[in-house]
Image 1 (cartoon, rainbow over the protein chains, first blue to last red):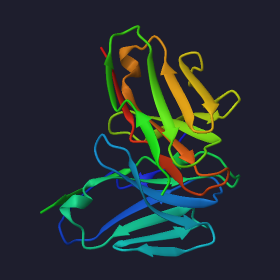
Image 2: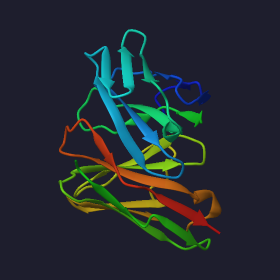
Image 3: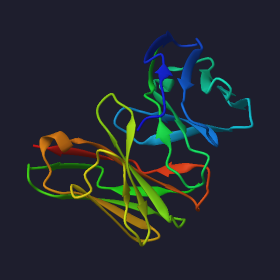
Length: 112
Length: 116
């Protein structure tokens, strides 16, 4: 099963520009996480935001969460070519120990 | 941070053969592990939840006799794709939580299965 949608599906920007990706989900959550995946590789955890948080920062990353709209956004500032990857949001249910359910992902291409 | 080791990273096999994929938690005990499948340019789809010492719980549409899961210890879960066919070709990735209610899921590096 999949939790929701991410938009855009694909995003192409120039180095130095900011990239914003959005994620929507359907059920109540305990937390929402963002992951990055380089082509054909495993997942790298980027940031976790809890359901009682509205915004979180980590380096060039800024994540927001709006539980009333069941949506989240990931902002990457001052993008670099090395940021080229697919980005997924993932949510877990409000019960401990459940699996993460992933959104469809956004493919980001940053050109130099 | 916690490490999950997955092997093999890539396997090519003939149609009809069975393939076993191992997932190990290296520095923590994982009572629960999760198996995902990812087709090209798509997202990760949860296949099953593997519970140590008990039967796995499969998601709707996933054949339990096709994808055998064994979680015999707190650090090892295996996924066996039985009688593999070309349509089983996919990227398989396991994950585990550090503890029953650990917030983060730690992922293996994935296994690219190609069935000829």
